[in-house]
Image (tube, rainbow, N blue to C red; front, side, top):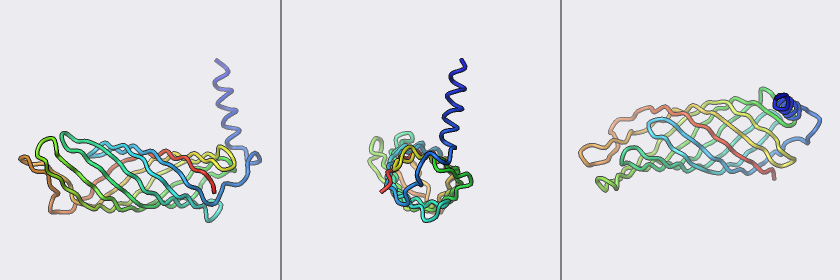
Length: 185
């Protein structure tokens, strides 16, 4: 039973040691996996360009595609945006950072199972969250983030066999987890 605490302490010491690794690359390309909760539970994948203009500042520019279902309505979101991060805790191998960001989202819904109708809208969003990044090698970084999102757009509704978008704008809160792996160029 003593091996698990010893292993965890050793891993923590390795991640927080500042002399074991080179400085993180300033430009990286990455792949992302996402889980989103809110009115629609969605899962998706995407790609990102990660920039490190200063030692403690990160910028992620991303494009994601998410898929979900609510009753008979299928939903597809295509999102582009960016986040700005500042490392509060930073070593050569590990960083903990709050993040702020903005995005635009193309939301598509179809109710082919019931009515054969479709609807789409453009939403604009802001996000805030916290993330960690662990440098696994000279060029490989693993990121994990938890984000709260607010979107401004038209809600979708399905009434009497017809799917549509509401006439009035509304604010929709959501939460999301992101896991990304990046390769430094």
